[in-house]
Structure formats: C-alpha cells, structure tokens
Image (tube, rainbow, N blue to C red; front, side, top):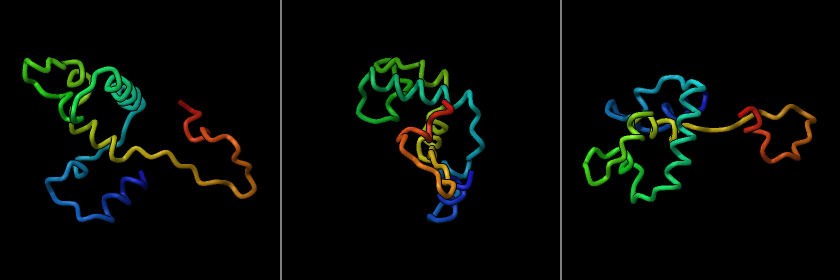
Length: 101
C-alpha cells in the first residue's frame, strides 16, 4: 500500500486519473491479473487496451469478463514486489519476493 501512496503523492495526479479510484487488491484479483497477463502472451494485440475492445472484429470478451480495463491498468501500474531486507540476511535467491505465490 505504501508504494501506491508514493505514486499518488509524488506525481501530478489529476482528478480524472485512474489511480484516484485505487482500492486494495485481493488475492483473487491478483490471480486473475496474472492469468490475463499470461493470456496476452498467447494473443498478440498492438496495445493493452485492445484486449478490452467491444468491437466484433476483436471479439475478446474473456478479458472484460474477468476484470475491467481500468482495474487491470491500475494494478499493472502499481504492482510492485518489495521486501525490506533484515540486517544480516543472505539474499542468494533472486525470486524470494514472489515465493508466496
């Protein structure tokens, strides 16, 4: 949550910015977010926003069924893995930040 507050406070955020609608992310949302990120790798579009287009030519209803475009982009902007190291710890594992997933 501190990371979101840093983003919110450190930049010129307008009332219309997506970040003003921030709410805490649930574990279920994180899993859906990761699934959608992985799915973007199987279907190539020019822009992330294109996955949520409602035009029949795109026909990508699965993305909007799981998460709104704005929510996805807010999470993408604010997702940050960090752990303050404890003095004297040996960090040889490069993936220790994502171990609990």
